[in-house]
Image (cartoon, rainbow, N blue to C red; front, side):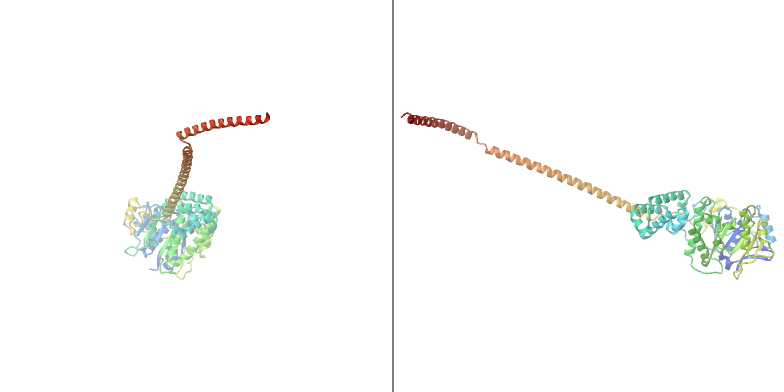
Length: 520
């Protein structure tokens, strides 16, 4: 089979050529016009020919792809009548092999990637950082790569930011300014990301792309359904995740050109969220991935209410187009109608701008690529009836599907191996221990110096005391004994007496001599 049936128009069956299905597409239309049923029919057709798909289930009703429809539902008569009207031969209710995924791990297998795999550009988008803060994130990634530090989860990124902030003086000279204010702003953005549930998205085991590209035992392509109802409350996380997934597909899959059928077809619901307030660098990244991923055998289909939500540079890559009814109540609506009409290959039999506002539920204007690569002339087409359930699964049905699919429990338990956080914490502990040891050594050195000084002072005092005592002992030793003192006293007395006597006798003799001489 080289094509899948889309619907019926005045020229016959409208089909999507499988060899051109990787040339991307757009499904647009106002709420309630039948986009979901169209999307469901395309996914069923791709699965039947062995093409795996990935779809974001925003409202929860695409989960019904995993179960067959039922004749007991309210829509049975509508779908049965449509199948008969368009000659949808062999139409019967049947299921599709499905795998369920959920970033929060509640309604499907957890989907994770690492901070390193996400990269600074998408992280900056995810945290709504300005150019300066994005520069700091880039520096953190570069330093982590240079020092061989794995950044797996948000704790690792936070630790790297703290490390870069602490080393700001050194890193600024080599990489550019790192201010504490910028680091603080990024840390606050990380807290907000955690509050939105982003912490569940980063870690290991990381998603392996091969698990999305599977066929069941009968050769039917597996439908990968991402539970996105809760994720829609964090639109930046939703759009960034899907863009990351596209980037991973682009980087992982080999070049195969235009295969006979796509390797994987990716459906991006609520596509306007991808482009809202996106910086120029991110838009360029999206355009690059959409333009080049075709050669990897991957088709990308955007589903949105208004076709003007898609930037022109991206819309130019969307070759397969299905346009449901658009309202023309406001100037913006009227612009969207004109824009949508101008994108189709004209059909002389149709006033496209007028028909867009008149389409019934389940009808669409369709222009798909022909086998030679040219677009078909736009036709008013009644979309085929789906075979699977149109509506959500019960929790019990979903639980059975999750536990019995090929993925099993591969991703259920998170793994926390050694990475930047643990390594930097260990380095910090070693540095703190070394600092404490150095401090203790300084204290010990001071105490030893004080003890030595005190010992020297005590020794000096002791020496001084010893010298004093020696002096006292010498003086004591120099003093005469009692006997010597008595002899000395006696000698002094005798000497004194003798001296007196001699002096008296001499004096007398002198006087006599003098007087005698005078009186002769």
